[in-house]
Amino acid sequence: MAQKRILIVEDDPDTAEMLRIYFEAQGYEIVMAAWGNDALELCQSRAPDLIIQDIRLPDIDGYQVVSELRRNLRTSQIPIIFLTEKRARADKIAGLKLGAVDYITKPFDMQELRLRVRNALRRAGYASLVSPVSGLPGKQVAEDRLERLLTEDHWALLYISISEVQSFSETYGFVAGDDVLRAVGVIVSNVVDEFGTADDFVGHISQSDFILVTREDKAQDILDKLAARLDRTFNYFYPFKDLEGGKTIAPMSAQVGIATAAAGPYGDSRAILETAMRARRQVATTHIEKP
Image (cartoon, rainbow, N blue to C red; front, top):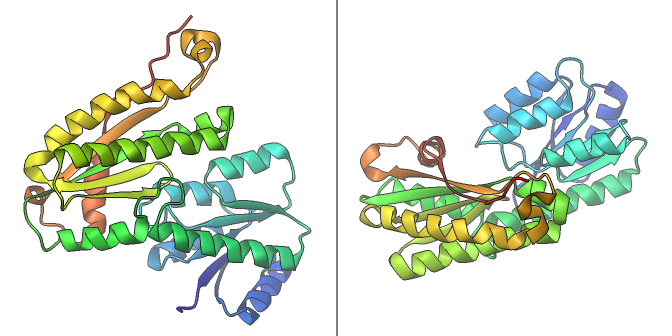
């Protein structure tokens, strides 16, 4: 098994050195940064398997570092554990909203941190093969399929993003949020079964993002059917009183972008994804009536 690479972003030299020595003894490859901008550069040159991230840094804070990483396709799925002195509930919520997988306050127990690192890496490895929420192929399998597109013709890639799932989950519970994503996965798969081909592919590549690979001549029809079904779906997950204006909520919506073989050539699979991401437009939304 390849050695896992951990980036430690910590400006306190004693804490950083303690973490380095401990995790190297556990068999991990350790990279260190004391500044937020240095961490971003390291992630761009070679993405780590996991980041242990302090919040208080000399230049930009840890929240900004994570926000930048999540905006970049190359680094958006790196599991991040906040390790910080900031103990307020609002700070923890802010970190988790950015997509951190864990939030640990100082002083901390080293054995507990080791177990949380191990568990985060295991979850990331499993999720890269199969999404535990939707049961669809995950990021690693999807990347393999995208690589094959570079040598194929007449294909289309649909990039499907569901926005405000995090806000929905915070309001109604994360089980409810997973139910939404599971339903989206079923809808996308059913549309492909009905209107696609036997060679089509559906993957769940991040918490709220899916991809669909089909033939170019099938793409628009699939998009139209998908948009219609998603537009009817979101409202089923909200309590009726909230849809009628009794509660202020950020409505979920679906955006879909398309990249095609004809629009190439593409230098790598990431360029295909980024083309589809840039082309996203809203195709479905929650219908909330304002009071």
